[in-house]
Amino acid sequence: MKRTIKILCSILALCVVAACLTLLIGGRDVSAPDVSDLIVEKQIVPDDQNAFQHLMKAADTLVLPSDLDTMIQFIDGKQVYEPLIAEILKKNEPAFPAIHKALSFDRCQAASAENFTYISKYHHVAILLAVRAVHDLHQNHIRQSIQSATALLRLGDMLHVDAQNLTEFGAAVRILQLGLNQAGTTARMHSISNEDLMQLSNSLAALRPLDRGLTRAFQTKFKEVADQIDGFRASHKSVEQTFSDANLLPIVLRKTTWFPGYLFKANVTKQKLSVLYRDTIQNTPRYYSDMKIYDLTQYLGLVGSKTAFLLKPNFVGRLFYAFTTPEIDTYLEGKCQMEGTIAGTRLIVAIQSFRQKHGKLPDELTDLCPEHLPSVPPDPFDGKPFRYSAAKALVYSVSKDLKDSDGSSEIPPGEIYGDDYPRTWIAFDGVFKIDL
Image (cartoon, rainbow, N blue to C red; front, side, top):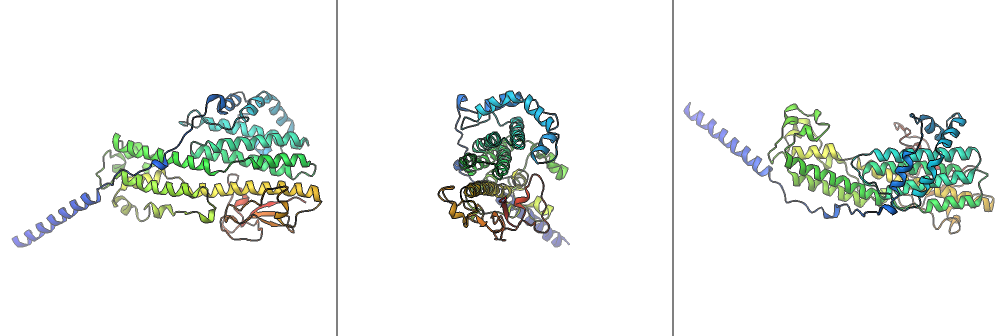
């Protein structure tokens, strides 16, 4: 009996020693990673060269309905009482000089990114410009409509170039989309002159690459998370105080303010995230087919049962992965979609200009060069020249499946779309039709 007890005690002691060694070895952190290449290089724009103050001043003078649905429906082509729209534009006429003064600058840098109230003001200015563009087009005032469409493009371009975070970048892209929608609609008007088409073409050609702002936004996001990791370690805040979604965890873990090294390795966490953000930033200028897209749940170790998740080393670090990592692939795909929309719109404008001169559609897109375009824009998804079908009167991108479906605008089974995710990029191909 005594021998059995001794054996059991020895086994228990070995188990304790093994557990201690596991915690000791598994609790070792690494040296702080070098993340100097992920530091945001912010160039301060002098106030006299910054469009921000002028845009805020214009936004503060706007007299808009409390519910913007009527204006948005009007922009979307729905039936709206037009005199109501004319009245809204009349009330806001004094704001336009300040808006156009702001757009005469090259940079728009928000004074602070601590809250996002200024983004709603950007949105209000953009909605007003889009309403004016549509209203002028209904009145057949094409040149005035183009001025508003050009202002929208300019606004979106300024905002994405100086985007300080992913929220601001997303807002800039939505404003660009408004401008591109209006530019494409105006270019398809049969009464548009070649001079007006040239103005649209120049405005589209002036748009700057999207990867610059997206890179800065990702850098800012990494710094935000890295600072949060350091703050969590230094302040001994509870998980509940750190993560808004912490209520998904057992209450004991939520309330805990200290974790051993086995459960929280600050440097390992930052190192893992730095690799992810570094690869993501390298992806931003690439074609979609050349991007290294992660399965984030696999890469960040967010797979398996909840119990296994809680017991793995660096459990708290995994919480940072789970609760702070944005949908990176969505942003990268969205960047390609916007580049595709810019390319498609440029081609529509160039084709309309070609048709005005020659009385027919071009046989090939290369016929547009160099008179109407310097070169055929590449498809941002596979890097090959944008596709074209004269017979079907359309230009198109192969979209994210990278398959040429002969310009099919059908929606694949199971796909859904809405106002925030245009039908163009849900279909088999990203199609831009040429009105005949």
